[in-house]
Image 1 (spheres, one colour):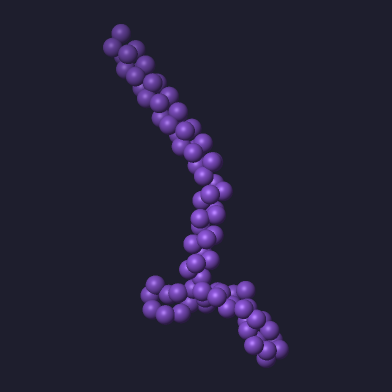
Image 2 (spheres, rainbow, N blue to C red):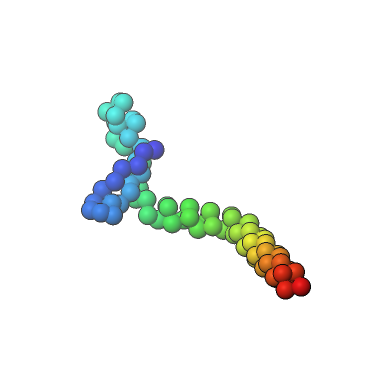
Length: 80
């Protein structure tokens, strides 16, 4: 499969199987537009990484709270 671009900017992506055409003079075996396929792939990718994203967000919040607590402790020590 190769990808080609057609139309005006933003160009539409088209996936094609051109090898039989180029090498043997046969018709293309497969051609389809990219927007639906790419949207489906994006949905599946996000679905697959969603649990990790939630975990990462929770870890980031924990680290932020920890950093905030450290700054608060440092300020308290300075006041003493």
